[in-house]
Image (tube, rainbow, N blue to C red):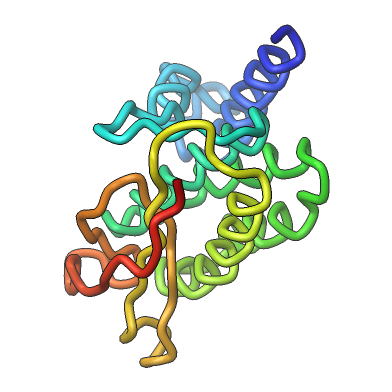
Length: 187
């Protein structure tokens, strides 16, 4: 329990630090002036409870999964900055889990992406890796829906994970928000 709290505190602190470094703010006397950045980042990066609470059997991967959901939500909302913040949190969390290197690397690419379209393309590989990790550890409670859009990535198709059956397509956002279907339900 104490180890999990240390991981949570460490992730939160790292996300706040990284987000503060990437936040454009006023300059005052040659120094950047931050107004409540820590509180803003902390509020943005805490997953809000949903109707279908999901808990994975691995606590550390569960934290990463919650950040993955925030990343997906940011892409649905075409929020590039939010996707970068959530990508950083996924990367940091993935570094703390066993065999999380590939997941961390994929998240880092999303954080470094030049635009929302590039983030969405990279999200496909991240989703495939997250799906493999979630299946490997299993769920303690709730249901995870594997959703699929056949039109994503120039009609190659792409999947993502969600806690809700309702389709919210991260690959197209508002333009094709409900394009897709539930392919699998993990219990």
